[in-house]
Length: 122
Image (tube, rainbow, N blue to C red; front, side, top):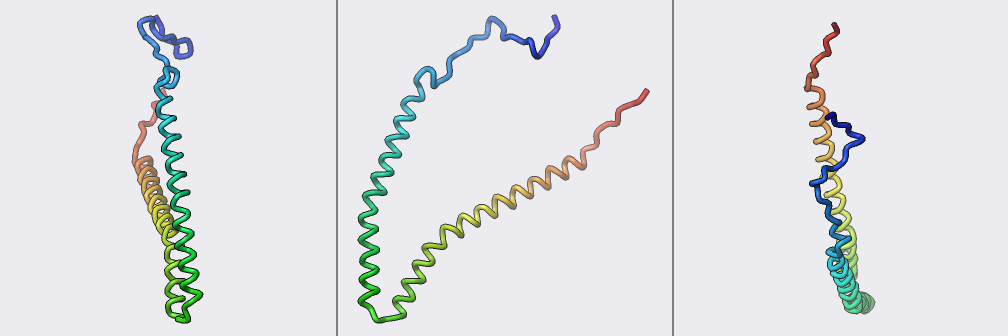
């Protein structure tokens, strides 16, 4: 018997099972994700009130202070908190890019050093 890739059928002994989602196993996971997402939204919403209060306190302390060194230090702190996440993300992106470039160079070197046998012409 010859085997043809395009006409291959599974043997009769092979038992097929429905996917986990068809059996309803994934339903619990999606409900869990919805609960976690809802909890995260509630946590962010609850902390927003505190964050706005902190912002108002900073504003009132800057308005009542005549000390320019304090205002400058506060502004520098705000810039530092603003820029830090972007610097971390940029460092991770550069690391990923350099690793990708190094692996691509290694693949090119491996491909260049592999010698394929020449076909014989009879």
